[in-house]
Image (cartoon, rainbow, N blue to C red):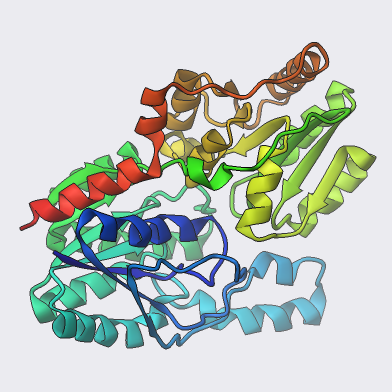
Length: 415
């Protein structure tokens, strides 16, 4: 069997969104599937990670990127007023009118490139992995033109994204377009994969023509081999990942302030200017450390050498309950205890409790977060915080290789 993975995020792009398509391309060839990847040549991603290695047994093809550069509108608008703000808004207007997302213009080159690759290499199945949602238009067009089977891999909800500010009229308009893409996926894809059960359930509600399965993200235990944990003099709790949309560090920071413990919270990745100014006003001093975006190797080393890890998933009006992000599995692979500021009745909370990997508190419950911090600090100072011990069965259940095996089985089932 031959497969073509179409992904907007692929090295040299950096960030967490790269790992799922990268690991698929890394492990599928070893399962007997000839693997090709189609990715942009250089969309000027917000983050790059030149240290990420391309898979050695997959063919990586590039299609020219046409579209806006990676930018963060909120950061560009922060602190600007009057004419300066109006001028920046005008510059950002073009990307905001692109639907369903600002990356849709890549389809102008990606669709003909995918069709050509399918024909030239006799590809059996095309896998489109989102975000962005517009990537699935490539799958639909390629299937129609070539007859190749199409698998839509949904890493975020298409219609109920947990980090969107749905009170915005512009966002609501884009969500209507996304709903149209969801219907297209349900109507045309031969199989649909959700990384969490709630995503799969959303698609099942659309009466899909193809099979729907849930294949979660996985834990890359091998990536942490050789990385050491050395206890420090005070509790170090680390959050890896950037802040956007509904993800909010302020309740946790308020809890840290109120706890009175001598600990340091380290945030690795993009931290919004407005949140930085709010934290400075709180007067945390050296109890807060902001570290700019760093390559994955640095991030993994920092996570491993932490006393505890902070996971933040917003409630987002109930949307956050089903979120089971790749970060959850990366944290589990580090084997360090997790403070999960997540919906207590959600999927991430259930997984962390079942694995015995940490404590759970609601993301906006300052008192519960404070109590969790005080307890972590007490344990740290009275014997230390040991590694999370996962049984062999748990490690297999969580392993990325096992998830890719599930994907391979799905591909083979399509004939």
